[in-house]
Amino acid sequence: SFQDLLTRFVMRVGWYRALQDWIVPYELRVIGTLLSLVGIPIRVGRAYIEWTKATGGNEVIYLAWNCIGWQTLVLFAVTLITGLSGKHTLTSKAETLAIGILGTYLVNILRLTLVVIVYFWVGRPIGIVFHDYFSNLLTLAWLFFFWWFAYGYVLEEKKTDIKKATFKV
Image 1 (cartoon, rainbow, N blue to C red):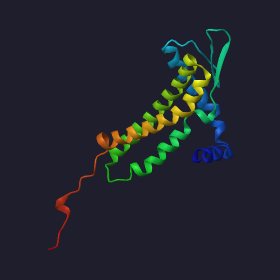
Image 2: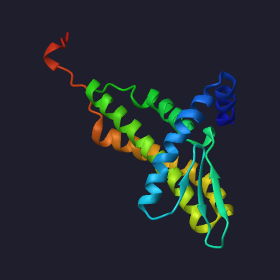
Image 3: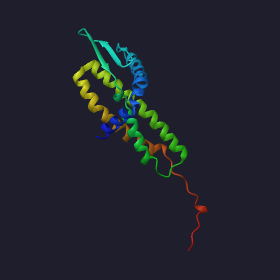
Image 4: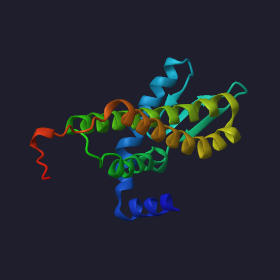
């Protein structure tokens, strides 16, 4: 699949190291803060979230570089090529880009937080299914909503000045 090709490319180039060393710990801190705010007692490491199960023992979820949502960002960037190709004002294109980047980031944090919540409340088997399938659906739903919103409320067509146009009869 396209996602596998992207993953191999990122590994071959070595970009995954930066993702694992910088982005994973950052996202885990953000997710850990959100989980703490909703009352889930977790501990956050550089590459994992851990908690004590009600039945005893610890449960650990590792966050690998390939799960942080970089593919969503690539997919978002690809949709920008066609989504912003129309005759829209530069300001509305910049607004659309800013909303898209922020929204993609927030949807990704939401996705990761929900995965941990499902693992915490329901258990690992359902958490894995949720991670593997819900993540893709959430990404696609976000992109559909984003472009609907952008075209409906943000992007403005450039105005053409009719007085400048000359017509020969």
